[in-house]
Image 1 (cartoon, rainbow, N blue to C red):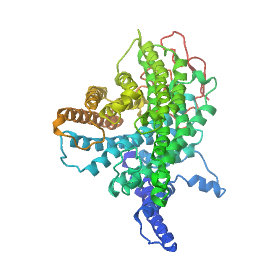
Image 2: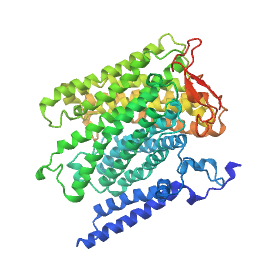
Image 3: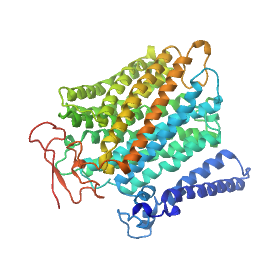
Image 4: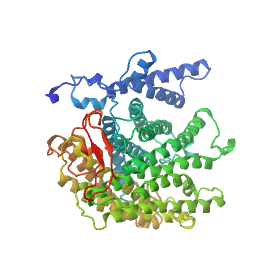
Length: 618
């Protein structure tokens, strides 16, 4: 039996990678110390030694895990293959700890890593939320509080990026009829960049942490402890992974669509993935550049953001937000695409305004590049920039509103059913609407001057992220779970997950906005008892723990159902999408033996005689 096969511990790529990372980091640290000695400097200086060593460690991790193996073979003139044979002496699950070029395996690797990071970020939140449940400091000092709140933010962002990678990697090739991604080796390389970088971000907590929040504004970040550099380096490498993955998605969609699948016959999630990838490919360099400049300022004394040396701290914010606000659309566009993907299935109606939804995703991606400075209305930037950025921010509501009208039109008079994926889809629409309605006050200069950096922003941002990503992410997991595992999840546990998370999130977000209107500042570890915020913070903390428990139920459901769940039908949702027409489990190269041609429209549910694809056996 597969379960009885023993695992060769060091044969797992992840284990080898971590061992190589430790060895490489130590070797890199020694090399930096040697260079310093040759330059006549003291051998030990913690910051350059740690930064140089851990940077080398990232590359040795990739060597250890096998990300460079085929490229090394190619350089030596040896034959390589897009197919990696699994070790027959190891159980099947071992492939998820090793290099694989199969986009489905990589998608699952992204997904599991995303869930682990979500759990980690959620744990950080529960710790500092417990501290905030009552006034005065209970068990955290302010330095640790600041580090935990910053780590919660950046680890959650990394988790979302990996969750997007999970959905895009697994689904896009299947939805367009491709055998794999355009660049399978690059796909594997992009995923494995995330493992050492995530370790670096976590290590920052043990090297003094950082007290800047996830935004890392100088001059504070230029003076923060050594953990700040680990944060910078980790995010820098995660950004590289995002750029490479985006390039792969764009090329795959342009070059590998099935016969007959023109752009306006693609599934709407593919449109969302392309729009997301365009943003990631063109804007991620800016956050990498801003963090790199602070790193160099700390390491080499460069004065990019030091006014005493001719620098400008506001320049950092322009560079940072030129990526970090479009990044909001990176986070939510795949989720909005997922909503549009699932609503027609469970309404049994055509998707209302398909072309408008497709174009609106591209419009959001474009307009998103012209709104970044609304984060800087209070930063001291030139006043004549405020009004143009206010109007451009308001303009984003137009293509977003197109999606809402389409969703309502799709649901209208549909034959709606309410399995767990549909509950999370409807929850996403509701919560994202809350995020959207609370956005314009932040875009309007007069109101933003009052609301900026309050808990109103915290509530608004969480509503946007939960509605735009978290709820759609869970909907996607439940929806494609039968195709991925061949088994059905527990519907009772799935609905318990939803009915705990949905009301708890509304309580959390609305109470955050409420105390924000009363003046509660975000990223504050203590507050005056005379403000009478104790009860509100206690309510927010209880709601947060309820959400946390609901996610634990979700994880338990996934693990238990993978072994004991009822065997799933090949197409339990009666979907028209190509991947559901394939056998379960999906063949390694998808459509090699099951090619298809697109002959109709993707979302003509309920129209008699309508077909989307015609499949044939070779």
